[in-house]
Length: 136
Image 1 (cartoon, rainbow, N blue to C red):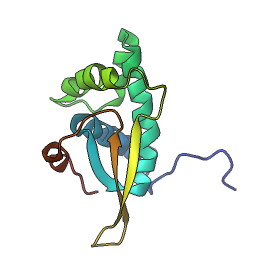
Image 2: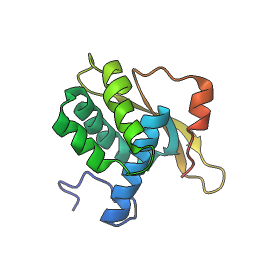
Image 3: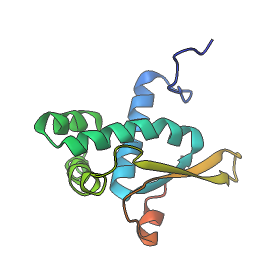
């Protein structure tokens, strides 16, 4: 039975799943919109919404929790600063539901259902969104 099992496994073990969601969350925060499969977008939405809630709190503990989850790279500090600055400011009046999933159709190579996941309140220019497209 599937009682109380709402998180999809995405055919990965726990470490790979955490790494995937962490990297996709960083890409979504950086670019504002990414293109991925519907299953990954549905798994990513609660993760990103919790990160935005941390960004809206804005205290030191929340910042350290976000740093602990997001990937540690050269641009890791830029991702956290954008989350706590630009994205938290854009979503400050919204009580929840910060992300939108828009279904696109199937991928040509393997017929996987594809979707855009993007922030609702963030203004995205067309050129920026095309650079941030990820095809996983």
